[in-house]
Length: 58
Image 1 (tube, rainbow, N blue to C red):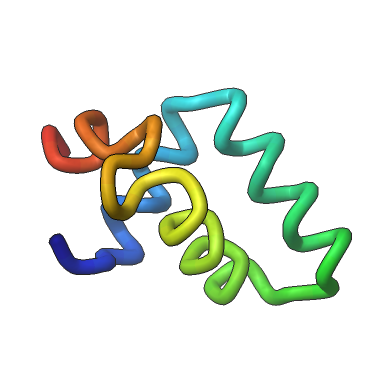
Image 2 (cartoon, rainbow, N blue to C red; image 1 turned 180 degrees about the horizontal axis):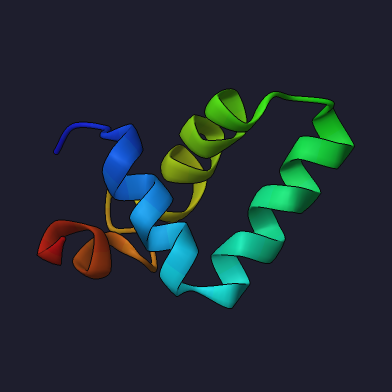
C-alpha cells in the first residue's frame, strides 16, 4: 500500500478524529500540512492501522 496525499486529504476530511490528530501533529511538531499528513498516514493507516480499511476503500 502506497501513500497518496489526495486519499489522505479525503480520509481526514471525512473523519473528525483524524482531523483533530492532524492539527495536533502540525502544532506539536511545527510541521506543514503535507508532512503532517504523511506522519499521520504512517501512524494511523499503514501496516494494519485503525484507518487502513477506510483508506483502501477510497
